[in-house]
Each structure stands twice: as structure tokens, then as C-alpha cells.
Image (cartoon, rainbow, N blue to C red; front, side):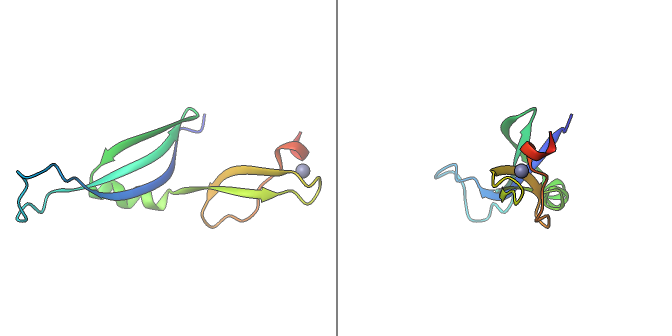
Length: 90
Ligand SMILES: [Zn+2]
């Protein structure tokens, strides 16, 4: 099991309408976009968790296998630039 795979963490300003004043500085929220059990999900997180999640961020990246020429996608850490081809792996 892979658990949660973080795709993105975004700061979101909730504009709930006329009742909100400019003095309300607590009106910032972080949204966590992730994949869990193969399903895309989102959740609200606090700023502390958002900072942590940013370090865990993964990226959906395209790869081309030099062995068989197959184009495939994989979720990798941002710094990763190589990945094992799913076809050649088997
Ligand atoms: Zn391959």
C-alpha cells in the first residue's frame, strides 16, 4: 500500500461573500490534493501541516523508456528524473 500521495498543496482564500470583512485575517486555508487508494481526493489542512506536505509533494511526470520507446506516466518526487519502465520491469 502506498497510502496518501501528495500532488499539490495550495493556499486558498475562501470568499464567502459580503459578511466577510477585511479585518478577518483567519480567512486563509490550505487545500491538500492527494491520491489515496488510486482515487483523487482533497482535504483542508492547517498551515503547519501544509508546510510539511509541501516537502512530501509528488509529481505526475511523463517518461520515455529508452529500451522499448514506451511513453508512460509515473508519480515521482519532484527531484526525480528517472523511473523504471512498467513494460521492461516485467
Ligand atoms: Zn521499456
